[in-house]
Each structure stands twice: as structure tokens, then as C-alpha cells.
Amino acid sequence: MTEKLLFTGKTHIAGGHNGYARSSDGTLDIKLPQPHPAAENLFGAAWSACYIGAIELAASQRKITLPAGPEVDAEITLHADNGSFFLRAHLNVSLAGLDRDVAEELIHAAHGICPYSKATHGNIDVETRLV
Image (cartoon, rainbow, N blue to C red):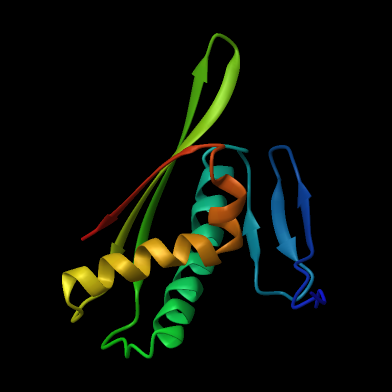
């Protein structure tokens, strides 16, 4: 297998009252006066964007035409237990116009494609629902 670099995301983050996050390509430029919930929101947005791409790839591999663009509502929750912090995730996926069984197949397959899903597998509780 030959590894091929597809993309490198570069960001600069500054903390504190005037905190911010900026990407080197200019696609991200937001204020971050508080680390939370910004971190969970950013993680949810990044994971959802990746996951949508994975759904589209899974559909393409199966020669399934998506009648509408996939949509994901992500909820990333931060928890504490005896001084230890951990995340949980709920991904509510909409694949309008698809047969429910086909849609379920795609959302399951997407977790095997999406690098964020792979990175979190076994590390955080993830609930994925077709809505």
C-alpha cells in the first residue's frame, strides 16, 4: 500500500478572553473566548463534514444516487467522572429520499470510511441515528 497525502489542515489557536481559531487557508476564522463549548462544537462540525463525505463515497462505491445532500446534526457532550473527562457523541443523520434499509447501510459504511469515526471508535460512546 502506498500512502498518499490528500490534505493538511493548519490552524492557529489562541486562548484567553480574546481567543480565536484561524486556519491558514482562511476557511476558519472564529472567536473563542471560552474553550468550551467551542471545542465540542468544532469537533462536531469537523466530524460531521468528514462523515458526510464518507456517506457520499459509500453511496458512490455502491452506485447509489443520493436524491438530496446528506445532513448531520452532531451533539458532542463533555462529561466528568471523578476528575476524568470524556466525550459522548450523537450523530443524527438525514438521507432524504432513500429507502430506510439503504440509508442505514450507508450510515454504517460511512463509519468505516470517515477518519474521525475511525479515530473515535472504541474511545467514545457514539450513537448514530437515521432521522
